Amino acid sequence: MAKLFGFKIQKDDEQNKNVVSPVPQSNEDSSDYYVSSGFYGQYVDIDGVFKSEYELIKRYREMALHPEVDSAIEDIINEAIVSDQNDSPVEIDLENLPASAKLKDLIREEFKTIKEVMDFDKKCHEILRNWYIDGRIYYHKVIDIKKPEEGLKEVRYIDPLKIKLVRKLKTDPTLRGAIKQVNGQNPADLESPEIEEYYQYDPSQTQGKNALGAIGQTPFSTKQRPVKIAPDAITFCHSGLVDRNKQTILSYLHKSIKALNQLRMIEDSLVIYRLSRAPERRIFYIDVGNLPKMKAEQYLKEVMNRYRNKLVYDASTGEIRDDRKHMSMLEDFWLPRREGGRGTEITTLPGGQNLGELSDIEYFQKKLYRSLGVPESRIAGSGEGFNLGRSSEILRDEIKFTKFVGRMRKRFSHLFNDMLKTQLILKNIVTPEDWDTLGDHIQYDFVYDNHFAELKETELINERLGVVAAVDPYVGKYFSLDYVRRNILKQKDEEIIEIDKQMEKEIKSGKLADPMEVQQLQLGVHPEQMPGGAMNPDPNMGQMPQDPGIDGSATEAPEMPEGGEI
Image 1 (tube, rainbow, N blue to C red):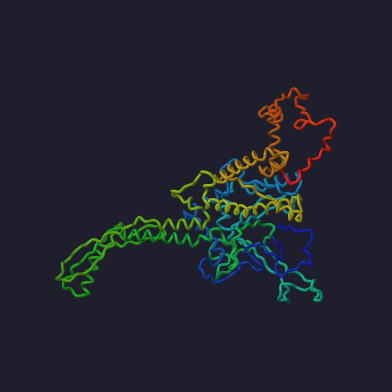
Image 2 (cartoon, rainbow, N blue to C red):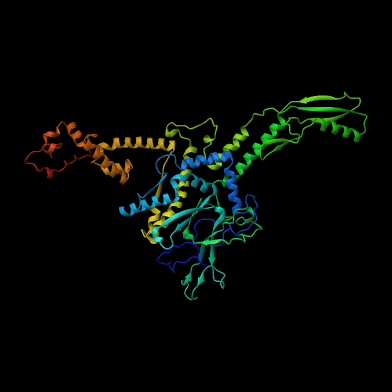
């Protein structure tokens, strides 16, 4: 493989030679064991949706400009990213990370560095929107080649139209199979197929004629050759939606292509119908006398062209154009009438009825919102609105929408995970082998701004406090205090430590009463009566008095009378 631009992170230990498989490793994206379709793939698109990845991404971006789609996208992005507060929209969560406190602090500091390098706190809305629309996002990780231990210096956004992951299968030209046998004697002496991976960046891919994978065109411009970039130098995060039939990554907007086209057509047809049926029409009966057929038709055309205006509807702009530069809602009928009839006559046809029906438009709008995963109640101008009552009254669509946003956040977090991995390995904080263990336990906490989530959390707290009140008499007998705080109140370790510190501080400052003193007062004993200001209760308090001659430790339970229990 030719030398790649960028850097490459390798593990110390090599793959176990005894572990072989005819199937190469897959990253669950669109490029599998071949040169991906974005550059060289050509096929016949039967559905007519797209012919190349370039055209597909361009269609997604055109869809995002539609008002209804843009409104739905804004609802999704605003739900996923809360960028209008003072806090950072995302923080790292290391609660489940099996590491020391020092290592966790280092990871938190490096995550802050990554957000500063990306300028994520300021550009979070644009970054997530671009990822949502395109279905993928690329960043080039720039480092100092001479001093890689300093970590990431800069990350640069790459247009998905200019870069594509290429994955080739390395095979022996003398063999047709994917697995190569080394010595031909031991069946275990097999080598798994090797995969050559790299990113191919072509800055000239800006026009449709040079589009990536455009049918009938050369893959790249002859003026500037593409650049091979090492996989570790690129951060790639996709939507997780893959069309395996065409080997293409899809966007979340893909399932809305048909719904949007239907909405556009029904809107245009509605406008055309109303413009053509709304005005009243006139029927002109022109008396042509005894003129021959040819002269009668010529005379009729002259009269018609004298008074008639030709109206044309432009679907691209939504305007009505007239060649005579003045607008007239006349679509009249001109009919000849022979001599002997009633002569020239003008009658009027009434305009169309029930032109105010919008049920079909509303249907396709709801269909578009459903295809995007946004609740129908969020349609602009909808009379339903939000129900800010109890969480039990929350619509099922809102719950589904919240879960959808959570899954989308989870997928988008791969962007942070990859950059954090590179940063920690370059700075020698962790090794590539350690990251395989630690990476799965790192979570990312996004700031919530969902009223329904807040209502749900409030009711959960009320329910937990109700359970705590019911369990309180049994604390110390069947339940421990730590069990109640961890399993009923669902408090984490950090929360428990922080709450204990705050309570101790508030007790010392006098904001809170000491629970021991409160308990002593309830028992009727003043704390000053005991040495040290605290009551030293009798160890035998609460027990039945016993005869001095009887050993209480050896007391056995009385025997049950014959015949069973009383």
